Image (cartoon, rainbow, N blue to C red; front, top):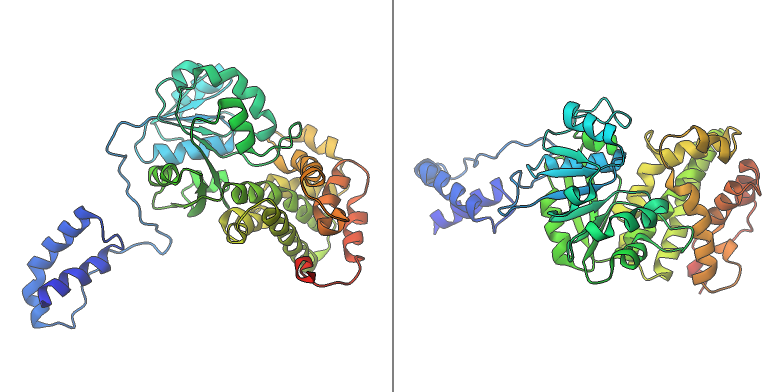
Length: 407
């Protein structure tokens, strides 16, 4: 009996995965060689494998079956996710638009424009040929900005094999259809295949640099979410799963709009108190909208909602926060857009979001239920100055903190 207990204790000490057969065999063997000394001194501690405090358990090995991954989109986040997958030893192809970019990546293992100081894994290859990139893909990662997705998919859909699942890393709401990515993908690629959606506080540069990151993958097909999590998870990239697609999509869209508001607050020099209050109230609006659309409150308070909002609002790498900061400093949206090389998704999403709320959410005075989301849209459209909008929020009539508690 004591020998059995020693095996179980050693298992728990070395690995939390009690169903990992190879781990069980390894620990059993290790215990057998130490058994006599442990029996003679039962208080002696069983050796633990040392880990960094931010190390995350997962298999480093590629899956035990042939897998090829294609990433559609060669921007920052496409490069980051290609790096994540390639680090697991999986052949990874980047589908890019420019022959010059493809050549630079293949020869120098660097993107000439985006994060050009970062060396990509050698297993990442780039091409402009959609058939070469997509014909033998096991999984396809979509990392094209939302507003360009429909047009892009029209050019590649015939090259995407039937039933190959798509993992979307794009966040926002399309201005023309007022749809989320789940809506766009199903309309463009059909409802027969499975889709998954990745979100969470995950700046591309930090991912490429190997900084500890945690994300969530949501899918109606939980088996797909589990497979993708296993494929992508590593010591510095933790992946959780969820069935709550709408919750993950709402969080990914709304957080960018809140970040623009936070940036304006900072640009105006209003201080930490004001920014903290603004972000908190913005998260309340995210929660209200998410629940109305069918999201779980726990998803909104998780990585893809509040977690991603914190990163985007307070992180120095946030494009949406920088856009808002420059608005607060007095620049116009047109001036800022003309000088940016990357897309700040929250700009177009802010306008689409208000239109979607008016279309799908019933009720009286929606502007009172979503004052921050409505206010950012007004500022982006040039109907209000940043200072006017933020002063308006402070002059709201006194009421209960949580609007929903009135009923």
